[in-house]
Length: 449
Ligand code: UDP
Image (cartoon, rainbow, N blue to C red; front, side):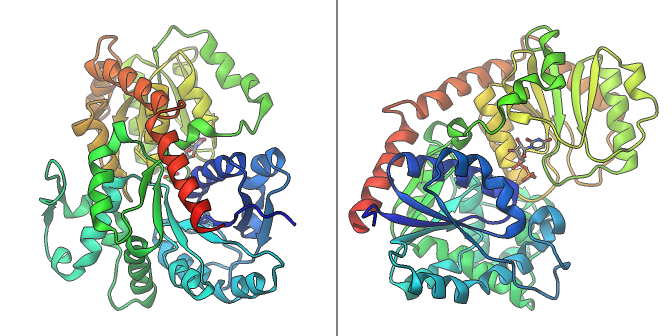
């Protein structure tokens, strides 16, 4: 039987949370750790690349226990929407019993649990099992400091129409409607909300915290978050997508990439709003017109099969509409792409940083306003275009913002290239993320022999 340190990895079932934790898991496996990944049946296919690359990785497949607020058969956030996070986490917490049973009957059970920061209830599970728990943050440290501050005094912050975070570097301020959704949706009389809050606060007293972020991006916020924790073990090990196992060898033949091959360098705007957001009919029409008026080359990922009023024919050659899903990382990495009209999900934000592509920000909900602030105001690698989940932009105005942003000499474009260099430096040998990852693994192995 192997004597290597055995880790139970437990991702939150949302693609944006799962993929970076699997990237981290890949790095742990490369460093010789023994891994079991806990997954619900429906999310098992997302594990295919890592299971193929590391056949020794085991899986613990457990069905999601039912919950009155969740649709039957729903197993991930795509089926439920952002508001479903509270009941989803509550339902997952019912797995504590089956996990304990599995642990107690395992011939060589895990020495530690690494679980998503939404699954803070695993902190008390790990304590009961007598092993350390590490919180994995698929989001940035800036957001998590904001969460910690808001959730430490909910009643006070709920009463405010805007919050200035004077304890944070640069004293950022946010209007109420721009605060993270899990705080805005929080309802003290709802038991699911309350246990979610307790979980978030438990992250600060778990054994350690690992962030999909890096020092050149968020050094001051990683340091700030460290001060909020009991353990002081806070590691920025991203951008984790730079460690991603290439899951699809055929992807370089995707028609969208062939289309990009014929476009000049930096000329194309990539437009996508992540894995969850569906634009309304009026939003689709307005955005289509704005793209047309901007006279910019573009690739636009559109969910579903909505009618676009002949846009595709009118912009043939200059614009490409991709239905449902696109290979985002590869598109952003193509030399022809120069801008990204994005909702500013954390993964999209990091992927644009890695690609050295400037952001044209349209934050809508969740953590997106917080992320947009870092990109636009603090790092200067983006511009604001629009905001809000229901906003229908003025096509002339949005078209103008896009045209200006895609101008060749935009300062944001140059700064995005500089930040890309720093992202790659972080994951080189001796770089900040590799150093912090090695420190984290070495200490974990030391306490979990
Ligand atoms: N994504 C993709 N193709 C698409 C849409 C999204 O590959 O057509 C990926 C994207 O690369 C990113 C993730 O899905 O890794 C979206 O995560 P993000 O945190 O940006 O937003 P969310 O979907 O959580 O709102």
